[in-house]
Length: 382
Image (cartoon, rainbow, N blue to C red; front, side, top):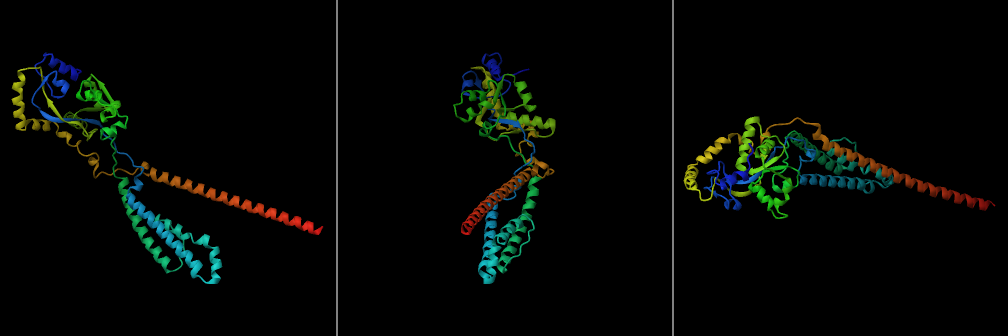
């Protein structure tokens, strides 16, 4: 049987029934049509949606260290490389004997940049032969090797641990995030939240999420499609918690989650009566007594015992669980390696192109010079 919120309140307002069978959120427009009982409990409106699944993290290979740590490593690499280059260059051009300087200058371009390449290769765990000159370069090089060993060991340990740890990303956890998605959220027609959406001011938080909402009169179908994963649902938080209880009781796991942000946080949930109904005066003392003795809270908590597992922070249910390392976990590293390879190839092509251009220009000058000298010789011979 389809149930519509507006139709139920219309039956109460038309005095066709003595009171409502369920509680309703109290709003200004509803107070004008019916009388409400003593507040049964205070609730808020929020959203429940499909719980996300485990997924791979392509950027996981940079997460073993913080951004500050990566910047520090880069600065250390630059300082070490610059220091080794300066000392190596100075040793060849200043410390070396005069007879050796000319030979040293000729090999500067080939040998003095080896410390720079060696520093980077050591950090990446690659072996490149390099014969250091002087004790200072050996001391700096040895210190850098020790630092590289420590950094590489810590990085590998953290990387493996982080790649096999579960990663769960929520589709949204606030109305602002919901506005940035295409998630479909269902609301019962005539509900207080639909009323708030219809009268929301342009540019407000509720107005921005209006595009995400679908309102239908068939509450039964809307709830069934919510459990089937077709859309999310917006209603009172206590109702959503009961839905989580039903979901976990049926399947044995949590397939839904509740958004942490809500609206109308002090919504009073009460029974509805026709205007001037004498039954309200009889029901109010009963509700008040049940609240004071904690019976209402006890009964409700008894009906949602299985929802506690689904109310834990997202990802906590995977604590201590390791997922197998998948190929998707390595996509980030492979993509970075591919881009680095392409950049190196492009840079090499550019250097070769410039070398060819320079060689061509020198060849043209040499050819022109030879032709000029030949013409002079011909003139002198004549």
